[in-house]
Image (cartoon, rainbow, N blue to C red; front, side, top):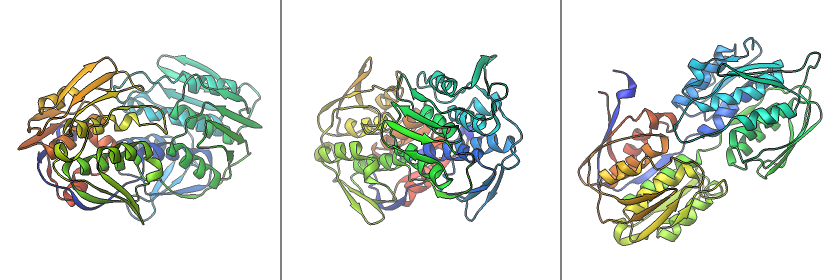
Length: 431
């Protein structure tokens, strides 16, 4: 049966204990796969997560002529774009994943031409690609959007993009990444103002620097890039996924567990850790990772926390659904304000089916903690919503079935087996 029909069956009420390995970050690995297009040399990436989006991106760049070979275990790969001979990202591959837009900058910088379908992906509101286009136009690219495709090229007689000062109208992660990659091979200096500051951007910049790029200011809102004529190969390990780590932090706290998250980084999760500590969980940095511990039940031992999502380093929108579940079973009332995406409360109706007390008013959700959730069949609507339903299932009494977990597989590397390894009663059922 098609994997799209897979479900998770969870029997709640088990504390999570032990240690769990945090995988490489999807949102760092995706642009880093695209960065391999910038050189004719071989690039080796370690700690690449095994996810649907990564498989799609591999297929997309392989389609363009990139040779991809294993370099050790499943998470180590060699990429060689010497034979890059296609400059098109077709709709069939792009429609399932918005991150496909990330080939636009590298293709334009390396080949001087790119044709990229307008992206699809998660249904969580508008994510305009016009900032990518505006930035590349400032660097001298000629761009048309026609029949659902972005068609970009350098002007006649020009062989390289030109450095420029670019201020995006909004903070955009993929926009910053695309322009950063394009600028590495541009002529002269590019300054990206109002740049995104996420750890995944810092990790991408570190990889580009290993390839010979001249970049400074990554991790701040102003990045300066001195273009170089060519980049060379490198070896790079993808940074640990802070959202996967944050998801496990919430799951452990909700079940009253005690788990070491291997390779998780506290400095990437400060806003989430602060809220967990205020709620009453203990989160400690230890050699090799983060240890999270809480007493069960949450309704007696943890207090609900009011929070607002915002751009990094604020509370991540990608952690809002998971923390909402923790609030739903903690003591007291809380208000969660979603400032990043407009329809990011699609998990609420499903949580209510499990017995959560949540009311929505526009961009805010008011959560009143309840002593116990009870199992039911629920349906995942997007990636982080599906993670929140899994956490809810872990604390609910009885059995919870989470349907449409293909959303979960897009962003979590073998989540159910990792949870089983720390004591959850969870199994994947193929319909």
